[in-house]
Length: 355
Image 1 (tube, rainbow, N blue to C red):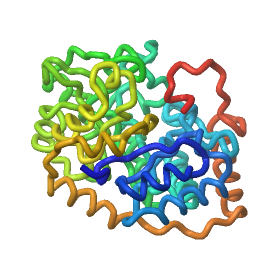
Image 2 (image 1 turned 45 degrees about the vertical axis):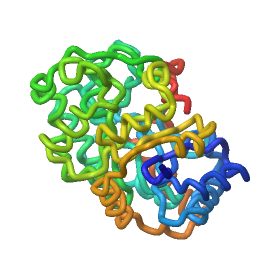
Image 3 (image 1 turned 90 degrees about the vertical axis):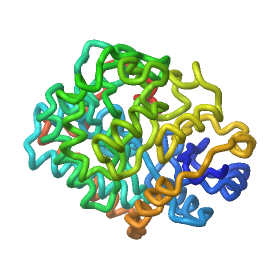
């Protein structure tokens, strides 16, 4: 197996010689960037240009750029509020501006896929399940309205979007970065509220990310990200989603504590994921791929290729344009919360806030 159905992470702000050799060999579908890869705007654009140059096809270059704590460039850029704060305090116009500016900032960096918006309902804000501040609300219509506005205006800037975490990470009582949570919800339960943001926004989502949460009433054995009942039976067949299905990071504790590397990729792709994410541990990846026996899915490969047609060449980078966009986002932040930066006034509660 090659890596045409994987999105992989990088070790640092520049490609190492080993990474260049590996990526030229395996040709992944794309890459994901974290804070460890980001030093400055100019450096990021150089990195994304390098990733394009070693790829035989235009790769998906992705990031989690949600706002608040999950804003990977906050150390050297604007620092807008999180989704919960925008939903509570902002007008629809301000949310639209937030989406548009997010898209423009990513576009100039050479990033073409944002793992946003979060479509989970915030059922348990008091629990440390990795979602604090990241949800647009705890009612489906609020999420549909506000996440929908953000998504619509971000996509206008040629950035692909990815709704997450299907079918509902909001029902988790613990953080899947550490171990595998379970939820006592049936398919019928999910259809009443948690799935409504997905069904409402599905025509405007380029991709959907599956969560590492076990729903034993739907699949007695597998978590959602590895479940054929959920990815193919529910999302693809019953709900009729035509875009890309991705897993959440397979390096999270929910998966690595229970499934071996290689087996996790095989289970995810055979369950119906188009692309699996491996964000942190690249050790022996080439050997792992060579050992895997997976029947290629022509429909999946076609969906990936079709989305590549939607990837646009980024505009020329200029420091002045980057500065102007950051100033606009800072002004918007001031309008919404009365200060120029969204302050991190509590300790980190999940690895997703630190990556």
